[in-house]
Amino acid sequence: MADDEAQLVQGCLAGDPRAIKDLIARFEADVYGLCVRILQHHQDAEDATQEIFIRIFRSLARWDSERTLRPWIMGITLNRCRTWLTQRARRPKSSSYRLEDIAREPDEPAQELVREIESAVGDLRPDYRSVFLLFHQHGQGYDEISQAMDRPVGTIKTWLHRARLAVLERLRQKGMVSEIEHELP
Amino acid sequence: MNCLECLEEIERLLDGADAPAEYEAHLATCRRCHDADLAARALLQGVAQLAPPAPPAWLGAEILESVLRDRIQRRRQRWLVGTAAAAAAIVAAFAITNIPRQGIDPAAASVAQAKTSGTSVQDNVQEAGQALADLTRRTATDTLDSSRALLPAVDFTNPADTLAAIPDMPAEPRRAWNDAIGGLTAGLEPLAASAMQAASFFRREVPLLGQEPGPGM
View (tube, each protein chain N blue to C red):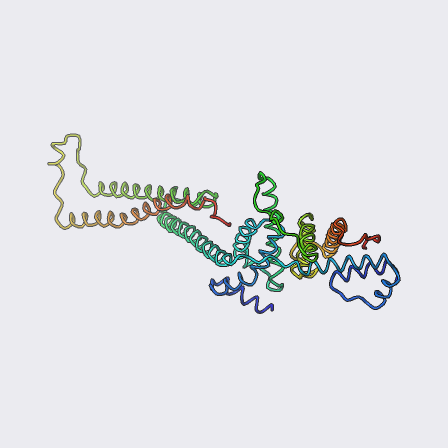
């Protein structure tokens, strides 16, 4: 995997269009998916994804080939999303299509559960949301998330634990899970 | 297994680990841990269906175009900076190599000083152009002074007498002198013209370097 990624990066640095296209195809879904969940806005996620890939290719020469590419790319994605959220907070709120604004028919219980989890994750503070999504949706381990977010593994574990508690509390309030009398460690 | 250990096991369950046998045994005897286990499994079931949103079909091509466009723009910027630096270096090198024997040519010294003082490329090119013009004037002045030395002393106070007083030069020395003057002029002219063209070009192009990058940057 490391050799394959190193070759891919070398091709991109050399300007090989196929390598550039391949790298975009390999990470487009992950980057976009994370942007949508963090920014909670489809159009912002599309614009941010384009910006992020431009930054990725500008910084590609600085990638450490001893590490895997995915955490590095996710780190750039998270940083850009964080900046985007900060800039958006300064702008006047606009009534654009947020993910939750779309009216839907009542879902089946399983779909209702997913929607509530989506809503709960959307309400998490950005750091907790990032860790939760990277772990549960993008399948990244603690070490990879630690690299991507440039935080110690212990901090990542704490944030993930708190994110889970917050989501579970939302599900309890909606009656989807029973009262949890024990507090998770 | 006690409740505290059971709750720690639930956290590992959420991390994707398998539960040991004593965990299931404890759940059978403890309602609270049993409810906590149910909640954790509901969360795991929900996030398993929480698929990342798929990007729109057109996004990949749009990203590729943006990336390639950015590469072209950055390459153009690097070319402009490199060409400006090379032209400034050529002009400065010409000015420096024509330092008179008596000492440092003040025009070349000003060019070198501008290069090290962190002034803009445009300032450096203007300095170099001015240095070249100064050098050309000095060369022409020195040439004129030297030519006066070749002519016998003539009284120029009376124009009518001046022309009569200037002796005729022999044909060959005159031709040689004219050739020398013509050669000097011809030799300096393209260099001065090139320097002036370079200065004009960079005055037109250099402001582009100060502009903000395009969209998505």
